[in-house]
Image (tube, rainbow, N blue to C red; front, side, top):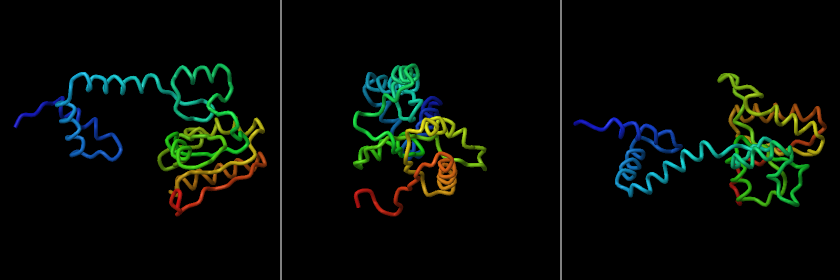
Length: 186
């Protein structure tokens, strides 16, 4: 049976989303085609807008609107940090999404720093590719007194944590690691 090439392309495009296999992508594509055209166009516009208008903070790495990110670059001040937060304690995560999980599920009151993944020599990913250079800049300012490592327990996550731990020795900074095996709020 003949099938639309555009439909096949849409299904393939939807499978790039995490947890979406071919069958889920098919259901989503069919739903989009049956939906109100305005709703589908609105979704498409928001996807395009997210690519062009969302950026990361040059200091901590969380997601910001591009205009806020540019303002932060121009002022070189940490505008993401709320009043009353402890700038001397920084939680380091593998991605901005991890920051939002910690922020929404704990009472942590320090600062954050998001890497762009983990060190993975086999994949050609070294410290500079994940944002360690930005971390060095923050460490050199002398404000940070403690680092809390919130990287994964994978080999790459452990390698990244070890690298950061060794880096912090040069700055005489206390390094802690989050607990493993204990469910959040458990």
